[in-house]
Image 1 (cartoon, rainbow, N blue to C red):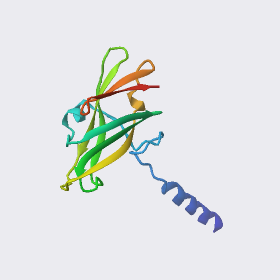
Image 2: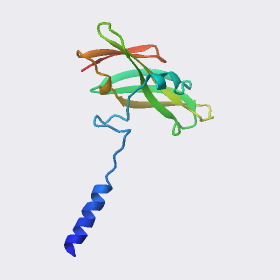
Image 3: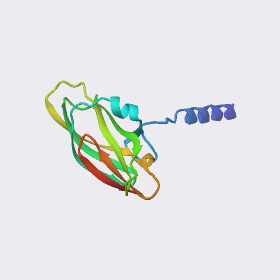
Image 4: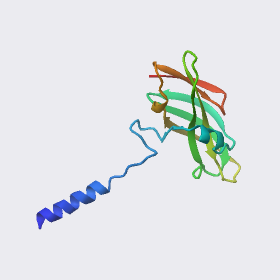
Length: 140
């Protein structure tokens, strides 16, 4: 009886562990998507990017948009899927925002995105954030 109870408890403990696909091993908030189709077709609601900062393999983006609280926003960092042959190589990204909030408050958020999947041959790549006119050098 004790063995059966122990096996049941172990099974519950194993299956109750969650695998959150938005989180990653770098402790960033979200993963970066690589998709030319999503880059072209994803929502592009108005936002303003204030600051970009890289810490290890996480890109922290400080941005604002109008809304009520920002709790319903859908935010994605999307790479176009093309790397230039310049030195250093460059990638084009956009911060996609779907914002259905109708309030007029200005909401500012800081989110981090795992950019480790953007690494190319060598040890650095420039990240051009299309809807901010900002470029940041990612060294790894």
